[in-house]
Length: 331
Image (tube, rainbow, N blue to C red; front, side, top):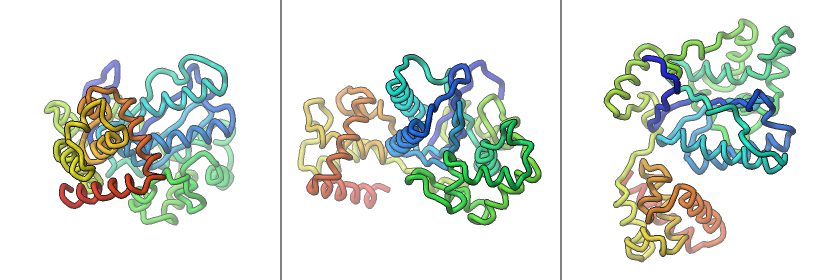
């Protein structure tokens, strides 16, 4: 693939990405542990909202790395929301204005079958890939990295679960579990690991020749391709009109009332949630269905619904009944 001045964002359901963002002028993006805790809290919220599988992460002084799988074609939407959320928090807390990050985030589409395991190791070893630690014996570097509190490696070594964030089972299954993954990490420290991102094609794709060719054909056709080893993880997409019909029936309301700004907010929140869960739609596209509202209004409808579900048994029952019908009848 030919290089481009501005790397192309390749998006499709089931895609795997390595994402990284660096502070403007290489400045710190965390001042203390409170910032880091808030970062992870907002990450968890964004992961849930956009139905992202977070596979690995590491927070460094002036940048971060994430490895994710998108169950929908929404990597850009997810990252925009997450980066705006954290920048807003950071600026408010530290009484500053302006950009926090240096330009756009970097996104590399990853060929999971051939590179995902290696990318996870490279990411998890990042905390000891600094000048003051690189010269230490491997055993000291292993002690440091396995106790580093701002990395998902703790999830991969049975020491901790990251507040429900990390889906570590997928990568562990590639190598045989916790013990083999630990040995894989130690081997990386003993033998050294090359930077897998030196093999990136067209500024965007990390994959073997066949994967790169497949992506090139996908872009030429404008079609969607799923990574074959993980097709079962991708949500099938019923038609929006089927979702609207089922939700309207369960709520006992006219379907048209769910698609107007004058409609009940909680009921419209149910529609927004199910359209997002079961249809291959962005929140901006859902907003058009719901009377021409913007993506943030859709997000607010879904957020208020989740708060209501926690306290209103009747709404929760209707939600579960509609959810069961959608799962049983359409998926």
